Every structure is written in C-alpha cells, then in structure tokens.
Image (tube, rainbow, N blue to C red):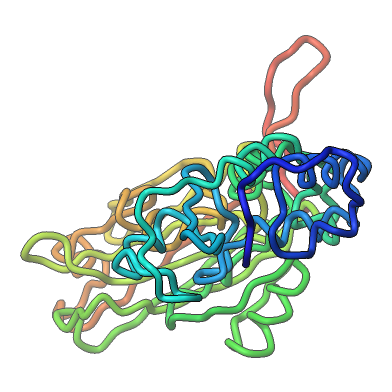
Length: 311
C-alpha cells in the first residue's frame, strides 16, 4: 500500500483513491464523495487495511519513506523494516490516513446479518465487538469447536454434529452415573438443550478439580444475548436420603464462554463427599438425579413479578 503524505488539491477524483501517491486532499475528497455508510467507500477503507495483518489501522499509522503503511502492532513485529520495500521504517506517521479515518462513517460488518448501524471509523471496532448481531460461538464444551452462527444454525449444529439430546418443556429430570467418581480430568459429562418459551437453553453437567478435590457442577446457559437471558430464571435440585441442595439463578448467555461460567462457580456445585452421600450404596459409584425447571418472570398490572411456567 503506497500513500504519499504530501497534500494535493482537494479536487482530485474519488477514483484516484486507489492509486499510489495520494495526498491528504485527495483522500479527504474521496471520503466526502461517498454517502455515509456507502458500500462504495470500500476503496477508501481498503487503504486503511494493514497489509501485514489485514486488520483496520488506527493511530498511530506508520509509513516508510516510500509511502508504504502499516499498523503500530505490525511495526514492532517486522523489526522496524518495511515489509514491502525492506527500507527502515523510522518514526514517520501517515497523518493523511489518520485524518481520512476521522471523516469516514461505515456500516457495521454484520450488516448482512441485520445490523443497521452506521458508525464513525474509530468507533466501528468497539461496536462490532459488542454488536448483538455478531455470530454466536458453539456452546459445546466437550471439544474445541470453531463453529459459529446464529441460534437456529447452532441448534442444528449441536443436534447433527455433536449429537446433543434435544428436549421440549421447561422442567427436567436427569440422572448422572459414573463408575469411578474419583477420576476427574476436567471432563465435560453432558450437554442437553431445552426448548421452551420459544427459546433454547443449554444444561451443562460436569466434573472438574476445585482445589485438591473434584466437584460436580450443573448450570444453565441461554442461547441468546445477556439482555434477553435476564428475563428468565431457573432452579436445580439434587438430593437423596432426606437431604437436598437447591440452586436458583438467572441463566448466563452463551456469549459468556463455558469456561467463564464454570470458573465463576455460577451454578449448582456439589462436593464429592456430598455427591457420594446422595448416591447411596457403597459410595463407590456416582448416581445423581438432578431436577430443575425454567420460568419467565412476568409483571402484573400492579407491577408485581410472578413466574410464568410453560406447560
């Protein structure tokens, strides 16, 4: 990418933006020639793409004496040598591109998924990191799965590729059995998907090491954004022999990684000794029955909240 940071007349044609040796006046004229959020502004936007990492460049934008630009992160990575002409980079900043970036407004990169936001260049990255239309990552924790997409896609992916059990209804009753409960290697045991209130929920149950002893944990995640997750509540219960443990909480969004939820201990945690007590028998085999329900809070006309249980 060649950009000569010498000012030229503002009357230069927008098409010239793709040529080498562009000055600040030319670039600004090109940027002004396109409507806000116009797809045709892509030519200007390409000039702001680092040729090394291909990410968008933000100040300070560096250039060599021949006008080749790159981002500050890659400048350190290439040991102060221009990756295009191998000349020493020095500390030359391309103020022209930095100024052009300030004048640009571009659509969110998730516009094809429904986002209608038109954003200043320097605000675009921050918005996209939190955009509600950005794809969701696969919530399956039994492997490092790179699949991503919208919720319907992920539901099909979990069912067809991970063979996850799918259930309808807002109550559940699961039994977990393990022959040797002392063998715990951070293994995920089970993921079940529930469909109720027109939404999907992931029920996780697993064993992991906490300190010197293994523990067993169950928690629910909502397949949607955090703001929607707050509309729902759930309870989990485990017990036997006249004893029981109960957990109530709000499901975490699948935007939060499985590890993040697990490491925050946001769920029903059962110590091994208690789990073996609930299992009964000779305490050599884990046999836990987890029951639970999901409900949606609804407000009455007088402002009180009452749980709405699905049928």
